[in-house]
Image 1 (cartoon, rainbow, N blue to C red):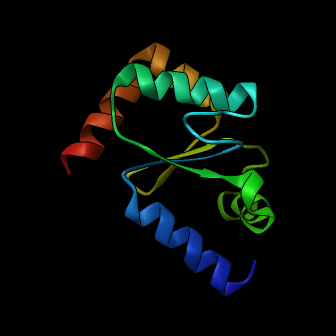
Image 2 (cartoon, rainbow, N blue to C red):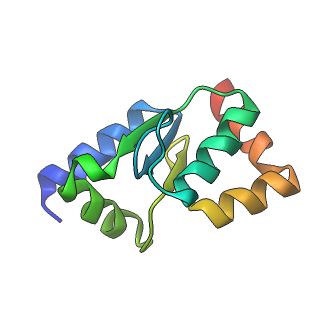
Length: 107
């Protein structure tokens, strides 16, 4: 990964309390896993930003290296990599996601 790409991803993660790297965007998810994440975050009623990896092949590959996580979507909360769709579903079902989101948005 180039230093420029790492800096670009660092900036995106730092500028957004809740950020999802996904296929498509929150209005038009382009895969089922991305749609799962959007539905969960929408149900929590929290503000979040998305980055469409289909628009930027460099970010699509770079985010996988950045997080050491091989799949998309990827969710960051308060600068911390949380995981993908399966992890988010699990955290949501256990009630932990709501807590993480509340803490992030309060800071």
